[in-house]
Amino acid sequence: MRKAATGTLLGLAIGDALGHPTEFDEIEHIAAWCPDWRELPLPKPALVTDDTQMTLALARGLRIALERGPLVPLRLERPVREEFVEWWRSPENNRAPGTTCLKACWRLSKPDRPWQEASEIGSKGCGANMRVAPIGLLPDLTDRHRAGAAQLQSALTHGHPTALAASDLTSYTVRLLADGAEPRELPGLLRAYANASRTRYDEFWLGDLAAHAQDPSAEEFIARGWDECLFVLDRLDAALARPEPDADPCQVTGEGWIAEEAFATGLLCFLLFPDDPVAAVRRAAYSSGDSDSIACLAGAFAGAHHGADAWPADWVRRIEYRDELLAFGALWDRS
Image (cartoon, rainbow, N blue to C red; front, side, top):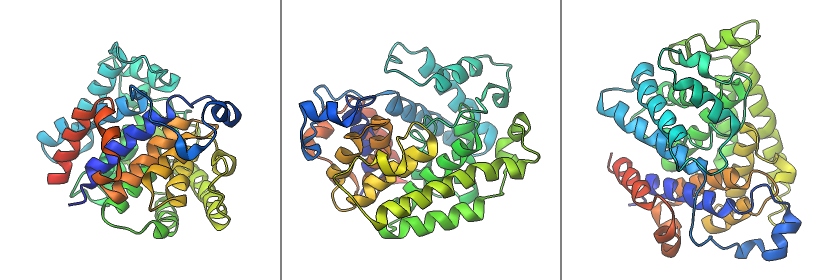
């Protein structure tokens, strides 16, 4: 068996650990200690960042929610909110976490505060879509349930419509690859999905979130996010039309600090090396932008496509949180 869930979660964490030392650094500085991106080493110890920590927090919340019954907004929101707050309070939360997550989790820690009021409605940082992969791994979700859950988990911290749309696209990409979609098909499938979703604001999952922004309607609120994602898909298409595997990927699809660019640049790195998952995460981590988040996403996509055997055994043995990652992978690979 391919074990797409295990491959996804391991790839996500491996990419995160590879990109941890290179985040915030320019290519020239990285080249001073590692001249060839193809030789970028996995650090010893292979420590991850808040990207993997929050992915695991979401996975724990999902497991609790599904133990209680079918996935619906309140059943999802409560345990995920609790897990995010536990992450915020944890002494292990010392990996340069994003300001948006810290502010939103502080507000989520107030039990009587509706989550829509805790959300950072103006933030489209990549902190929501770098953690969303577990939703794409859940079996038997309808498209509406997967999209709603992906957008809701984003909105707990990042309420900007582009953060919602990018999280939805990320989980959809993981699901497509886990189901066996060919990498070359992805750009067209994702564009069609974005166009079909463009004015679909799901009040069942998001409640009155859109009312906290300044858009004239909920449909115009969500369209703003999908339009930005469609624009970055144009940039992805242009990059794939003239591929430059040895160039810094951030120069063509963005540095990844914001959600749609992290998604597109992570996907670009995977699509440049669809048959070589190790090269995909190394290329993503050897970059001038938000290298850990970009490589985290590239690793998730490569792992969903290739499965658990994609990753070197020595890397798997050394990755931080290995046992928990493998446990969640086994849980969803069995389902």
